[in-house]
Image (cartoon, rainbow, N blue to C red; front, side, top):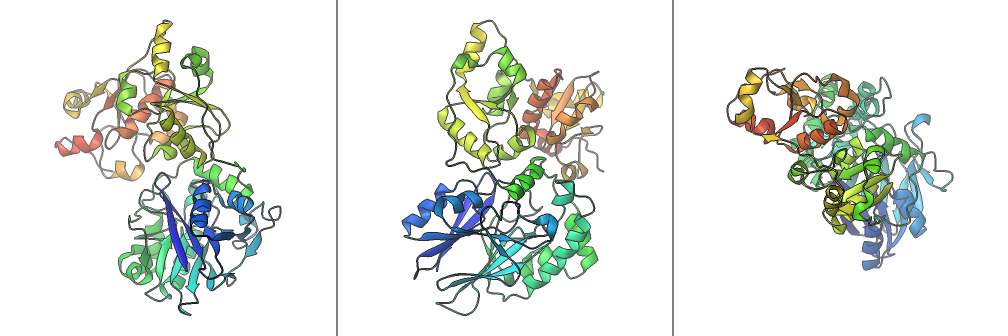
Length: 473
């Protein structure tokens, strides 16, 4: 049996290519949108991708299953479990074979047994893989978002992200019973999850790429849970805020992701392309580092620094129905950012320019702005004297574990819709854990018309380490 794991750091997402050495047939499970990687890997091993499937309707990235099946001529296999409301709407048009619990997909001597494992989503499947050429016993489980290393899939996304009311407690109970199936598997069965550390699909995902059923039975809090009501309470408590774009991903992945043909390449724009009208009426995103942006930026632009969390914040803050212009350090950075945006379905990148746009902007008399930075030591007296309003843009669990006394709490992803709650009678101090999210928040507030702001350099982490007063909820 051939086995290869693919991992996308920006999405913290894993997908798998599994093939039979004898027949040279292969299947891809949970493909993302960058399908060239799977095609190249299969070609290098002289494998033919004849089947494409996925564990569930994903919420955190745009699926590449449909595109990969079209590109390779492979058969598309999709879940038919979960009830009428959780069916793939493009399945018939794409001639997909529908899967139910107990079905099998066979590739020569490799067999995938289909397990219905609801809880994270109603339609969720896991695939128990057996290399029959070596043994009649299973070697591993592609568990998708059902079981992770050290954690289990969150059952609250449909309610908290997709706004499907009264579903998360039912899903949590379903997840508990699905875990009974998992615990019944042999200890030696390997676990190949769909996500790793950094994903918002759970609250405590481990960084190891794989595990075993036996180890997860010992070390995974959710797998080891035996009391159903306690499990339901614990699995719903402390989950991170689901990004708002998760609801869009659910809809697009259910209805059928658009076929790209190839990953997009951004168009280079002239440095003079950014005019006041373009900035005012469009969406211009400066992807330079936060300190570069703070030292001088074009008013009205958003700062989403390109890095590991770029796609997450792009999904939180950017609209899906409008063109976006990027300001990047260079063409290579713009290309990488465009790819990351495409991975979550943000396909409307109209082009990019570089920091030379700043020179072009000022050469015709326009001004650039800066964002003041201050340390905790500099701001502590002003906070104590109530001379400033602190806005904490971390998530709810971080805030509950400790915050600057008197801080107003608005997670950065919700700032745009909650601008009216920001007081304007004092300077605003924006604060997160280490300074990265508050830098993004600074640009959000400036673009929203709140100008008297200061970014707390080092964030709450430095504030707490230096022994300053904190409050608890």
